[in-house]
Length: 172
Image (tube, rainbow, N blue to C red; front, side):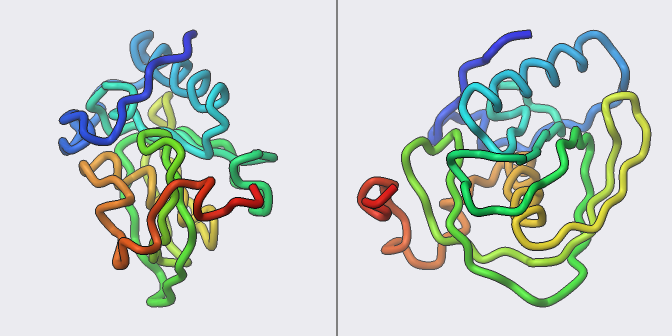
């Protein structure tokens, strides 16, 4: 597997709606997912979507055990999620600081649902369905947004709450 170049905000691939995956358990899909995990690990990401490495397919990965970019969050199970569907389960929303490997060095305050159900398939085509709350729910929404051509700055309500990490959080 390999660490791939992550596309940055402004690249047109990031603004496309990604195509669904039709075949599971293929060498091509396994290689894509392997590269995604290598890339996410090398950059200390909490998640990664296939469009971020230039592949316009509905594939996301995520997972957090201990991450220096997100030191105070609860663990998120390592997951491969293909052709995801999200169902919001509560009207409760929460504001949280988000970063993105495609928007390096920056953070923004984004409002997200705090409880949702996600479903889809793993790389072998087995169904997945889970309920997620708090940071887990935020990560799922952030990554699935990439599949619809949405980057987190597009969700900001106040541009004053968007900036470079070292300016927003000088103690980091």
